[in-house]
Structures are given as structure tokens and as C-alpha cells.
Amino acid sequence: MILPLAAVAMANPAGLLFCPVLFINWRKRKGRKGVHPTTFLLLGVLLAVGISGCTPIPTLPTEIPGVPTPPPTGTPVLEPTVTMTEVSTPNSTTIVVTIAATPTLPDCPTPEWEQVGGVFKASAYYTPLESDYYETDEVPILAAEWTGYKYLSVNEGYYNNDIDMAQKAYSNFLFDQYGIVLQGTGQLRNGYYISSISPMGTSSEDMRFSWAPKGRIEQLNPLEVGAVCPQNMGGLIPHPNLDNDGNLEGKIHSIKLEGEGIENFFSSRGKDNILEVIDVGEGLCPDTNPSGLPLIDIYMGIGISAYDAHYIDAVNAGEMKVSIRR
Image (cartoon, rainbow, N blue to C red; front, side, top):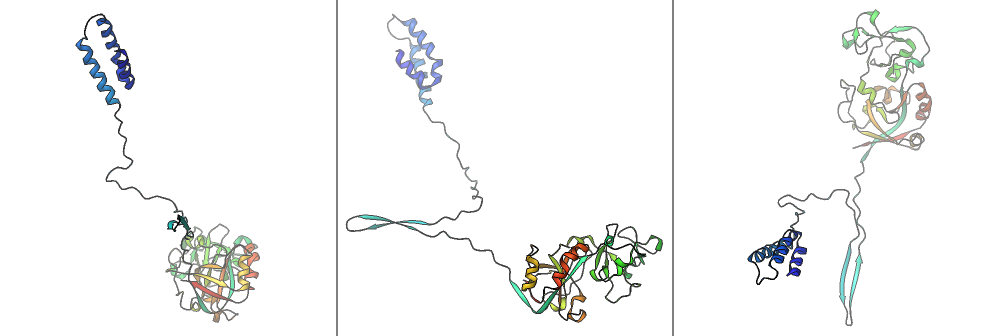
């Protein structure tokens, strides 16, 4: 009697709760004939609990019905294709394994460059600093006539008609041949930027200026941007206008400068020979400059140090071809 009870108890830990009761009942009945009915009842309960303990516990499904399985993430790994073919011969059967080459991903399309007709030369410009100029007489800065005011105000971004409130600057900084007259934009000693908006040949007494838009200054990345003559880009770059932030309206394409001299100029400075066109200038056209060729104006950087580092090498790079990215 004891052995069956122990087996049932070991089959399921719950049986341990009933074993003492059965054991006591058996001891009380020892020496008497027959088995008390309670013994059969408890034994039946123990057997039922033991059998239920053998039923495996269901596990949760790895996929929820009705919910799609997300696709694998990450870059796919291309592996060679392995093919196994069974070849029968009169005496035996041979397995032939064929390994195909690993497929390669298609290359990204390379930019299409369209060459502009004609021969070009490089010119260069930089941002002059008033602090680079020796101290000389200070003159009030005349504002563009379209502003409705006569002077740039000492408060950057404003204009006024009071000469006592006019922003002043060194005259050589404003009118020197390497100053704003030729370079277009310069930085005052107070850190603000101004641009010349008068055509070439304007006298210093009539030279007009405006505050340079901040967006335009942020575009000036040395040896990465430049200006072109719009009429000599084969119609590929229309004559654009500047918006209120100083950005060129419309899509302006990048250009690639090709020629041994100009390519050596860029490579020696750790740059490629591709420029983003951010401006146009009539002074870069062949009928307005002494070279008689259309010029690509490369931006050098800020201050006389940038001029000394790049200007001479750029303008002496020789003739070149120009392509535009479509």
C-alpha cells in the first residue's frame, strides 16, 4: 500500500498534501480487515492530480495570428548560390556541387556632366576685412537708392537720412581695387557685412552699399563655391536673381573645372575640382574683363591671408574646360 502512495506523490508535488492523510488512515486501520472507503476516495484524488501533472503546459505562440511578421532589417548579405545535383552512373550515384559567384549590388548612378562650349579661365575673390586696412579717413556709407534712405545706419540692418547716425568705414576699405568695390562683400570692424550694389565704373562719391543678407554669408565656403558669367554657360545657367535672403532663385547646378593647372590647384589644397555656383557677375563675361575669356570666380575665404594663400595660384592656373551637372 505504501509504495503506490509514494509513486503517486512523486508524480506530482500536490500528492504530498494527501500522503500523510492516507498514511494515518492506513495506520488506524492496521490489523482490521478491509480498507476504509475514505482510503479509496483519497487515492482516486491523488491519481487524478498525478495524471494532470503529466499534461504539458502550453507555450505562448511565437507569432500572434493576424499580425504580420515584420521584414528583416539591416543591409542584406549577399552570399554565393550553392546547387547540389545528383548524377547517376552505371556503377554509382554522384553528387555534383556547383557554387555560383556572389552577386554584386548595382552601383549608384554617377552624375551626368555636360560640357559647356568654349574655353574658360579662373579668377578669384575673397571677403576683405576692414581690420586688414590701415587707419585712414572714415566716410559715411551711402545706402542703395531703392531703400528710400541715404545712409546705412550704425544699427545693422537699418537705414536713415541722418549723417550723424550713418555707419562709417575706412575709405580705402570701401573703394580700394582689392576692397569691396571689386570683391562685392566685406566685413566691417564691428563684425557686420556690407555689399556693394553699384555697377563697375561708378565713382566713389556715388558708390552705394547694402547690408549683406546673413544667408548669403553662410554660403561662402572657401574653394567650394563660385560665380559665373551667365551668358557664357551655354544657356545652362539662366541669369538668376537674388531673393531677400541673398540666395539665388531657381536651381543652380554644380560645375566641374577640367584642366591640368586648375585640377592641381584644388588637389594641392585637399579639395576636388567641383564648385557650387552661388552667384553671377557681369564682370566675369569676356567683353568686360581684360582676358577676353569668360571667367569662373572661385571664392578664396576671409581676409588678406586667404588672398595671399590662393589668389595668385588660381589666376595662373591657365585655360580650362567647364562641365555642368545635370
